[in-house]
Amino acid sequence: MHKLLNHKNTVLFSTTIITILLLFGIHTSYIQGKNAQLLQSNEDLQKAFKTLELEREQGQQEKEVLEKELLKLQEELENYKKESKPSNSKSQGQKEETKKPAADKRAYLTFDDGPSANTAKILDILKEYDIKATFFVIGSETEANKKLYKRIVEEGHAIGNHTYTHNYSKIYKSVEAFMEDLKKLEDLLDEVAEVRPNIIRFPGGSKNEASTRAGGSNLMNNLIAHLKEEGYQYFDWNVSSKDASAVTQDKKIIINSVLEGVQGKKDAIILFHDNAPKTTTVQALPEIIESLQSKGYSFEVLSKDSYYVHHR
Figure 1: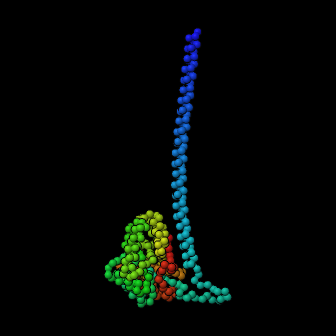
Figure 2 (figure 1 turned 120 degrees about the vertical axis):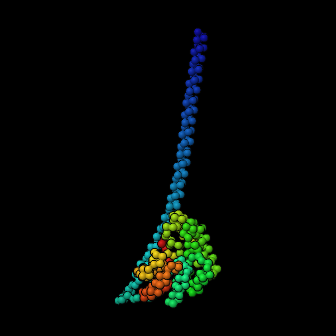
């Protein structure tokens, strides 16, 4: 009987121990499972936080881009308002409109891509009519062209920077690449004509696809902002002579394009080119000047603080 009781106690004790061990194992597995779930949840939360941070940064960048675009649109709107103002207005009680004086209509003749032999011919024509123009020049270190840089300045015309190389794939690679090319021409002009222009025209204008292909969609915006910080003003145009639409454009097309383009404009920044093939631009110039004079335009040069046109 005593032995039987001992056996039963042993079995009961063993059963209790086994039960405790099983319960402990289940509890341990439960705890380990919970830990794994917590670790996974923590990783998921960290990933979600990083994603939110990236989205917030992207949203901020998009906001800044949109703010810049808004400023440009407001600028263009102001320019449009200036251009679309009626050129004449009746004073109260006045029966007839008074004709605006010639100074109220301004033409800015601008020539890109020189100097060349055509530049010298254009300077002769401008001297004959006693008017001034603006030349956005590129880099050349021939003695003949150095003399032309100097002549442009000495005869009272404005000289602007159109970059040294005019090489789209090179200058639009980055802001730094553009500034290096710009400064190279600036140094040359300072050496030969003692002038460092603070007015520029982008090759292809400020709204061109080449800059996007070479440096990305934000390159031009970043470049414009940098140039503004450096104290430069850039100029596009609101009248094209279309002399760049062909190697050597038809003279009549050049004349008609300009005279049609100035219609309704109080300020006309007219785009011409004076590189070597543009012989018909030279031929068209006297008729254009006389027609603009008959329409009441005076002729002025561009400066950092003058009327400007921005395409972007």
